[in-house]
Length: 132
Image (tube, rainbow, N blue to C red; front, side, top):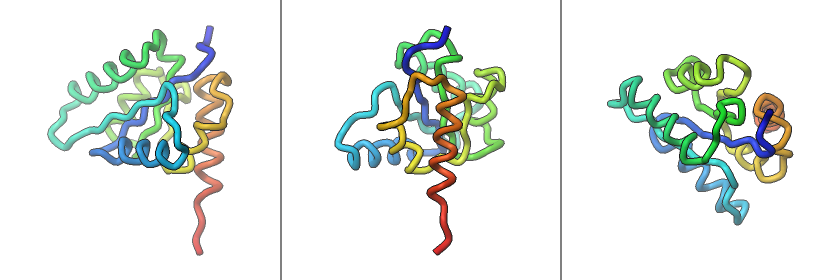
């Protein structure tokens, strides 16, 4: 059974995700519930990244990987691969994080499950990309 509210863990290289989350929350004038960010440093090995991911999920009080959506910066990166492994490749990892995705978290129905939430965020993130 899925949780009534999907948790979101932002995983990026360096402070990019944490800074984007801070900026989104400042823009929205609210703290996004059940959302946290972790940064991966150049010196972090795979075990350290795994530990950071596990700790972030634990800190959110989530009991099942099924109830977590990971937003990561780069497809194919170590963080993306490790997050995919946690979810058994069930579509709970979105790559290409951008600010509109984080802003959408304030209004999207977070009870639709991790895979559906991921699809909604991809749609928003994709619509926001333009060449002008």
